[in-house]
Image 1 (cartoon, rainbow, N blue to C red):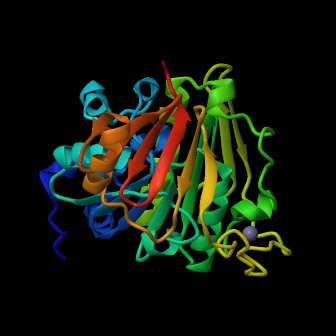
Image 2 (cartoon, rainbow, N blue to C red; image 1 turned 30 degrees about the horizontal axis):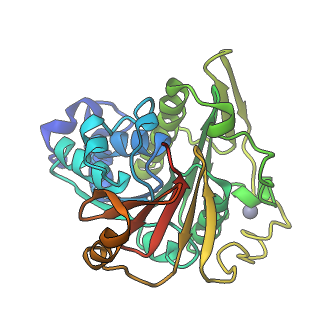
Length: 329
Ligand SMILES: [Zn+2]
């Protein structure tokens, strides 16, 4: 029996027995959706593009800011100068890293309206978000469609990874039935975050993704939690679904089915909010003409328009969203 041939690009992982040429073919045939491309998302995307995951969809709603460069490994100062949305900058970087795979950046807010479309056909979904609201929606959508997903979280100097296989392992709601109330969970804007924990915990999750796709190795069927400042590492053993879980047992997808309408959310990491009008599209060129008469436009490209109104800075995206923050000056 002849072995499948693969690009010499992947030789260092195909000579690793756990992957081999057969595993590489599975990676090349896989489609992974990465929801959120900030600190953890850039590391996940970087690993999976280099490993040869054949189709990557990168979804992110935000643009790059100076304080992102400390830990968001795909971005640089030129991206910042170009006012690029993260999904666009990530797509360009990943294509430059590996032109043999398909990479699609999507500038959008992952929400109940679009999440099922975004993950459609995915072998696996990776959590690169920074908030529980989106993770609970993601959990509902993945459980509903029986798609494995991997939770990755990092704040301060600790991080957590959980591999969720619907029906086999505990899901997010098995372990935490209700979304933590705002202000309870530590966030990067209040507790800060050291760069290496982000890369470390996202690398654990990327390894989980590779093992899951190739069907080899020992999957983390519980929770891995560790701290790079105090060098603690804990693995909480395998947990099956909880018998009364609203999501994976009762199939009551409360977060996915929440009432749809214009929504406002505050964004982690800075003093900003996002407002959106679902299902709409804003012609940015037209808007720029109208805004230019009454306001100062500070950034403009194919993807966004930024201007100031009184003490606020508004960044408007074509998918009918605006991120509003207090004016830095
Ligand atoms: Zn569950």
